[in-house]
Image 1 (cartoon, rainbow, N blue to C red):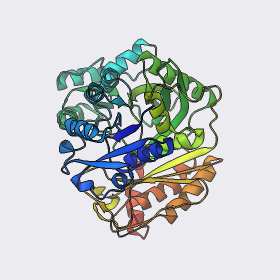
Image 2: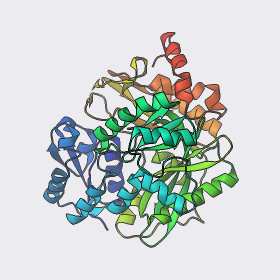
Image 3: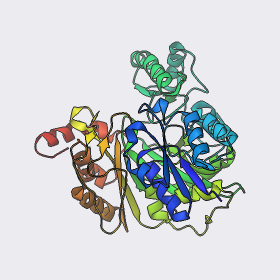
Image 4: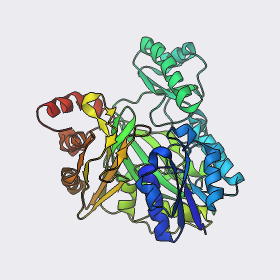
Length: 458
């Protein structure tokens, strides 16, 4: 069993892992940059080690500094969280070469699934439906134009490596494609060190559905149901739900089985997520597999009763899954809202600064994952995610009402947040009736901003 776990991350996810360790009797080691010296996650871990200055490349992305912290602290394992090094195959290999247990899949698996075109080819070869598009990286904009003319516009260009909406652009015609291609490639190179792109047909009015999988070292694979992740802005998720009410019981069974098949095809071990788009006719297509813990994992935990982080640690320690697919029960409905320190009325500009006052919601069925506290600093060097507010209730309608109550109880002063925007989404008829899709925010943002100007605080 792991005895001392180093968390190679920061913020709410680092604190999430620290708490899991405390409940498992495992010592935790937080690593932090100089900008995070007063951070809650660093203070709540068993011990903390400064690994460099504020810039992520000199701290949270510095593998040598993290390894040094592991040696110094005597840690025997490392959890990558999400973001930063979590989907870098070299980090998984490096950690294991340092004698550390890596809480996640093998580095080669991360690389294989991280290469989106290779992952797509693997799934296609295993009979899993994929979106029409290029069979691999596209070598030039002229080749992209040729492929797009065959599959039909609109199309989306995507970075072969990475994720999180970076290196992605939509093109509705050839002119837009020729303009978008070099921009997406440059962004992919800046973010992932790889400017390669591939082309896919854009499924319009799509729903974004993902399935949580858990796999151990003994060939046991289980799915923990699907999540609805269609409330997005620039391919970044804002609100997630579980289960997905856009999925019929028949399709639910099928898509979960396909997710398990996808995990088996790559020999997956630990927690992962298989992502799909669902078209208006009910067809579904594989997009990618995220080889890490997802930001939105709490909604699955709320309806399944499975602590995914603890399960990750057990699997990495050599244990079998603590549950079986047959005995797993998914109960109720859960919603997560991502509270970001940003200004929606100013093109979502980040809003760093001092949190003068903070009050999070409580009560039945409410959970908050956050590393904020009154008086803390939200610094400008990292992601703007400030908190995840999660609720669970018996039905979707009750969960919506509970989330509205929870958001109304939330107060953050000193920085701007998207709190009001989240509340307005929950009040929108299309969200309430479950008739939204991935274009929902783009279609309604102007109205939301106008409502804010008329007195609805964002």
